Length: 73
Image 1: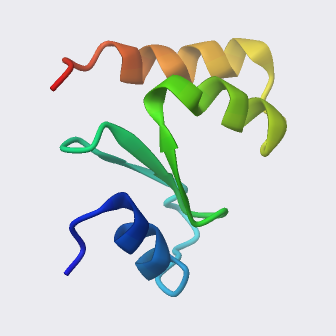
Image 2: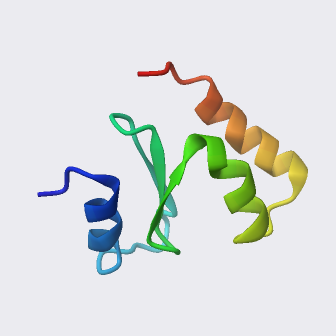
């Protein structure tokens, strides 16, 4: 059963697709980074994108804005 970010991340190690890089687990408010097979809390997204993927600042801000507009649970 895929009910926790850890179980989802472990499952994704074997189910990667070329076009899907991240998914958002609403109930946990975490992002699953498929290339790294890890759960990233929304609050840590900036650091993850900067250090692991070397995403430029402007693109990081645009990406983070999408997740910050989601209602808190």
